[in-house]
Image (cartoon, rainbow, N blue to C red; front, side, top):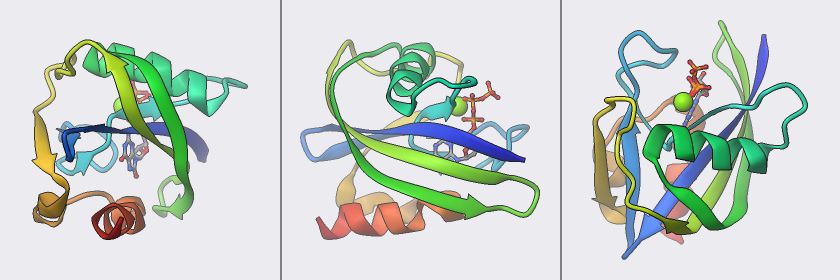
Length: 127
Ligand SMILES: Nc1nc2c([nH]c(=O)n2[C@H]2C[C@H](O)[C@@H](COP(=O)(O)OP(=O)(O)OP(=O)(O)O)O2)c(=O)[nH]1
Ligand SMILES: [Mg+2]
């Protein structure tokens, strides 16, 4: 099963907004950059806008594709489109009851992310 996913690296004042995946979700219990699956034939950027509105309550006004990562979890193959989100209206929250946090980029390694995120976390820290 191959799924296309859009995720937002929401940045403000050198901090990034992360969310905890629920235990019943794929890769549950790990921290993520909010986002979700693209609907059939939906462009990743459109999925990003939709998911960040649904999950975090923000309207994206400025974003750019940062990296595209393909990863095989064994039970699921994902194609992840990570966007840097530098402009948005509203204050992000966990609209679906998920635990959320603003963390300093330098502290990202204290949080456990899915395997597919490792190169992204490293790239952010070295930027
Ligand atoms: N959102 C997000 N998903 C990630 C990240 N890293 C990573 O491997 N994934 C994987 C986990 C999931 O298999 C998939 C995203 O699916 P999702 O569960 O967020 O999708 P969704 O929001 O549409 O959820 P659903 O309502 O369909 O359950 O991508 C990440 O940083 N953010
Ligand atoms: Mg999601």
